[in-house]
Image 1 (cartoon, one colour):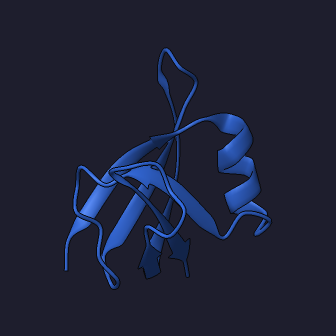
Image 2 (image 1 turned 180 degrees about the vertical axis):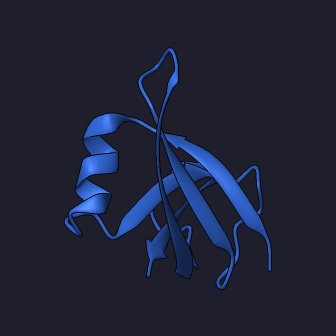
Length: 75
């Protein structure tokens, strides 16, 4: 199992924090797998805010995604 630190814009960070967005769509350049941990670090586009959320990947699929991209569920 791996841990991935990834940037996330404030509007999406809030949605994850509030439980309204239980998934991420990402380029699979990190080879995400079920059971991996993601540390979502809030990023304004210029700098980190210092806020972060740690989640586990519950499921990964590339169904109907652009080439090289996946959707993974956050639990």
